[in-house]
Structures are given as structure tokens and as C-alpha cells.
Length: 556
Image 1 (cartoon, rainbow, N blue to C red):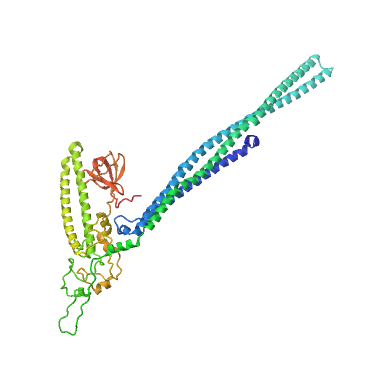
Image 2: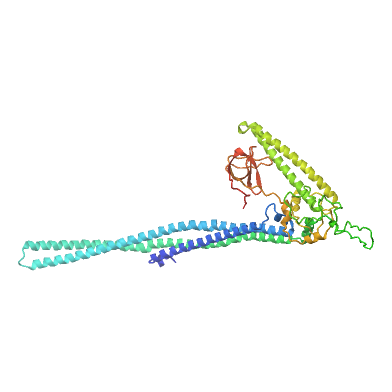
């Protein structure tokens, strides 16, 4: 089965068919390209969805993710992010293995097809030229034969006429002989041209055209095989990510199975426990006796008294509807004595941890400045070592002040822990990370009736607790600081190896975000991504400040 022998006279149809084949291939390329765009769009939407429901940094929403159910939801969000990544892999692989390869192949195919059909047209033109030569030789032979016949007839007529001179007859005879000779020459030429044409025609239809059409057939068959292989790759690219997608789904199932309702219930107790004891029995008041009535210290109406009872935990007023009345930041006592004992302990612990982190930051800054001073001492051309002494002295004073603050809050913490009952489920001090997560989660009391700062209970308070107050009213007072916003960008002019705490390594030409400009100490604070930030020498970077920058960058 060969196109050269079976389709020897279908040059135009083969040309149309092969063009149609290329169109089909280009259509398939377009289909795969659109599929990759859909995969990328789907992956982007999944990532945006996962990001949308991620807890915000240093917010109340982040604190809620300490429960097993919300942690499982967070794990689901993270796995969906990985799930989206697999769809990006599908898009990348289809682009590189199918779209790019077929696009290059189509260009090669077009060039090959053009070459083959050029050869075919050239062969067609050659055989047509040979045919024209044959026709011209044939017409010339026919014309010469007619001319010879006319010359012969004219000679015979002149020879039969007695009135014609002998010279005229001889002239006619010579003309007739010349025409006969020309006819013989044309006959020989026509015969030769005919043989040549027949040979060329045989060569054309049995050698040249079959070879050309065979090449076209092979080209078309390669195209068909190639598109089949691409379709197989199309399926294989999807199949390769199925195990990883399966693992993502397995992790989501595992996270769902880790949900522990008992543990979550215990965490609610830890979050909202006030530390107060329930009120005691109400004393009987005998109105039949003329003696002056007294009010039980444990009475629910004790807080309505004349203010003679001594307040507990340093409260300055009675019957105050805490903690449901929103206060301006900084309005509460520094030692958090307006809070229930358990919540006060957590807030004090949070404050101690916060101060310790501030001390660590100041110490990191001091270490970085010390290193920079050493660099200046060794290389005076880079800067004046004495220029950082004032800043080092300030940092030392700040560290000392912060340590005094830590001692003060640790004293209050020891005091409140001494008043609380023994805690069997947790050690007295928890890690700073855990405490920071749990300290600001308290926004209401778990009891139906709220205690006043002096330990008594009032009917007014129990009524007021039914008021609908936003959950953020209490938490606004203890919001964690937001991450430092970016104020511009910078480009590393040289490579810097940040080996000390507080510094960060950068590579020459790297672009980073600026979150704190040089304050005269020769160091600039930069951020690479959400978790990597630190100081680099200002002379090592070229800074581009953005005065309109208002918030922290969002990392994708």
C-alpha cells in the first residue's frame, strides 16, 4: 500500500489532506494549551481559597486554631494548597512535554511538507515542459510535411506546363527537394523527442512521483503516530500526580481522625476558667429580731453593700460589669488586677514572655552593632567605629529597663500563682510559645454569673451578662502587634554572610523588602519572605523607599 502507486494522479488532494493533518495537530495543541490554562486557573483559585481561610497572623482567629477541630481544618487548608500544587505540575508537564514539543514538531512538519510538495511541483513542471517540447516538435513535423507536399505539387504543375521555362522548373524541383529534406529532419527530431518524452514520462510516474509521494506518506504517518503519543502523554501526566493527590487526601482524612472532642472541651476550660470559687450559702436573716441585720460575705447581693467589704485582687470599685465593658487600651491596671485570677495569671505570663522577646530583640540588635563596630575597627574606610557607641549605650539601657520590667511582672505572677489552687494538669510555667497562643484567647467568662473583682456576685451582674457584646470588646485590649510593614525594597550590591543572630545572609543582586531603614547605626532591617528577616550593613544594599507603603507585604 503506497501512495506513490495508488494515488499517482492525486497530487492536489494529497496536498489538501496533509494540510488538514497539520490543522488537526495545531487544533490539538490549542486544546492542550487551554487545558493547561484551566489547570493553572484552578490551582490559583484553590490557593486563594486556602489563603482566604488561613488564620491571620497575631490575631484572635489564629488563637482559635489551638483546638483539634480547627487544627484539622488548618491541615485541610494546607493540603489543599499542596493539592493545588499538583494541578500546577500537570500544567507545567503538559506545557513542556506536549505543547512545546508539538509546536516545534509542527514547524518542522510544515518545512518538510513544503519541501516534498516543492519537489512534486518541480517534477510536474518538468514533465509538462517535456510534453510541450514534444507537441512543438510534432507541430513542426506536421507543418514541414504539408510544406513538402505543397512544394511537390507546385513542381509537378510547373513541369507539366509547356509555357514555363526550364529554369523555373528546375527551381521548383530544388524547392520541392528542400522541403522534403526539411520534413525528414523534422520527422527525425519528432521521433527523438517522442522517445525522450516517453522515457521522461515513465521515469516521472514510476520513479519520481512514487518516491515523493512515499515521503509524504511517511511524513503523514509520523504525524499520526506523534499525535497518538501526545494523547498518551496527556493521560500519563494526569496519572503521575494521582499518588500525590491521594496522599493529600489521606492527610486530610488523618487530620479529620485526629479531632478530639474531649481535648477541645478541656481547652475551653483552660481558656475561660476564672479561678474564683462558687459562692457559699446565704445566711438566714431573722427579721423578727430588732438587732441590726448583717450581710453574708458570700451573699450574691454583697456587691450592693455600702462598700465596707475589702476588694480582692486590687479592685477599686464594686459591682463593675467586667470584663464585658470595653475599655480604652491602657485604661486597665498594669498588673491586670481587674481580671479573674486565672485570666490574670495568663495575661501576666504573656506579658513576661513578650518582655523576654523584646529583650532578645534588643540583644540581637546589640550583637549586630557590636559586629558592625568590629568591622569598622578592622576596616576604618567603611565607617567610624565611634559612631555606634551611642546606640550601643542606648541598647544597654533599654535591655536593663526591660529586665526590671520582667522582674516586676514576674513578682505579680508569683503573687497570683500563690493564690490560685494547685494546677495538676499543667506545670506552673508554660513555654512562651504555648502561653502566647493561649493568653489572648479569653474574651468572656464561662460562668452564668460573673464575679466582681472582690470575689462576690451580684444580681445586676448576672443580668448584665445577657447583654450582646461583640467578642472583640475584651480582646481588643490585648491584641498582639502586627508584623512590621514593608517601607520599600532594596538590591544587594554585595554578598553578605549573616552569621550572627539578628543578621541575614544575602546574595549579590538579590531583591528584598525593607521593613526598617538605617537609624544611624549603619544597619538596615530587611525581609526576604514571611519567616526570614534580619539586619544587613546599609553599605551593602541600595535602598528604594516607598513613602506610600502602609502595610505588611502579603507573601504568596
